[in-house]
Length: 182
Image 1 (cartoon, rainbow, N blue to C red):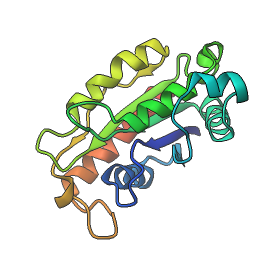
Image 2 (cartoon, rainbow, N blue to C red; image 1 turned 90 degrees about the vertical axis):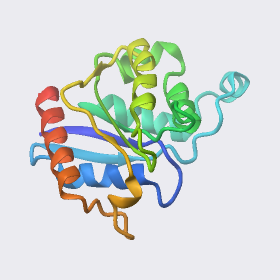
Image 3 (cartoon, rainbow, N blue to C red; image 1 turned 120 degrees about the vertical axis):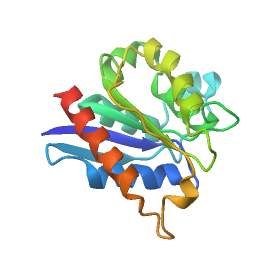
């Protein structure tokens, strides 16, 4: 059984991306275990802090979890037609020091999905992540795409994905990601 780390790029309690991540966990095939990780608690990147104190404990723990996993699922919001700063900041920390990039990200299969209330989905954010994933040496999964638009209509008050077409798409995406990792 393959294990991947799933990370939502939003800190908001009612985040549609965190809800989408929970749906991905629920709809993953039996041969794929998705462990949810958080970027909460990761400070703003500061090279002076890194030089003085090293990598913060929450970053070091997440780096080890990603390095030990068979893959990574990034669930990204789209802010101002781009990638969210808090998520990019976390990835910047996770790539420190640079000599750790191959251990943490090198040749790691990565899935990229996202949700937004906007009509355009998260196409621009997901596209914005591609140069970052390339520099980190990952293997992005391009088999299917999930650019969930109109997220406010897709989830119930408890954050459960209720739209059956989208549930089917997420299930197919997760099956494809599992096959890609295998």
